[in-house]
Length: 298
Image (cartoon, rainbow, N blue to C red; front, side, top):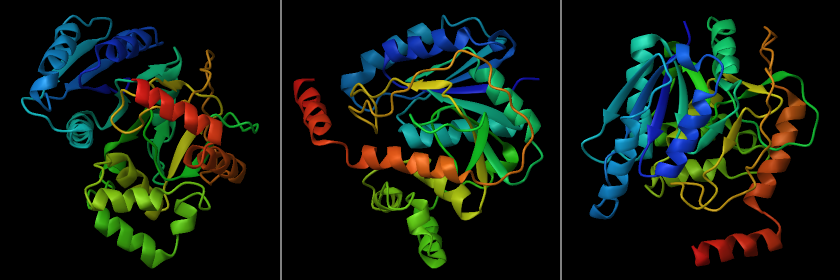
């Protein structure tokens, strides 16, 4: 049976509609249970936009079942995801997770379901991920990296139990292990600083804690060599990303074959990711100027 899908929404009707429209075009969508977690308004200013999203959600069809959880209060992105994933994975034993700004290839669900089936009993595999950074290097059909990721992913109950909510505990373990540089992809991207910011309340990132939880336990995520997910939230509407087109990729429109392989880190992929992450952290001057101008004019 296909893993259920947990979709997390807030107040972006256009994005939510595009995400669901793409998901409905997926192979196996009609056989999949869809759970939608609609976060509550964070202020009077977005009561109307949240309700517009909910009006649309109540019309969604094209899946085996559709369950909508309307939050009475604002959970915030992190708490909404943590609570929703916990609810679904506890009921079904596995889950596929999407946010409302992710456009999927028609073969996304097939890849996720294949990966979740094949690696279900591999204790070293914590998750399956559908998005890959826009790397230039040629990579194998599927490969592993240590840690976990957040743009279209799936996991099992046994893996979700490894999630550590306490960022301070995770940071202490990173410092004790002396692995901060590896965690930051060779200082390419400040993931450690992101974790510190979460501890200090400067962000509420569930994703940095998910990544750290997996990394510290030496667990691995399976990736496709071509992206099955497009992140549409780089238009300034996202909670965390703002204006950022560096994440843009070309979706693949063919099935990616998942076969059982040895669970070890692909060093070529690690270096390729580091190269892109470095550009994300310190983009070229012209790109920074354009991004700043888009933000000022929005």
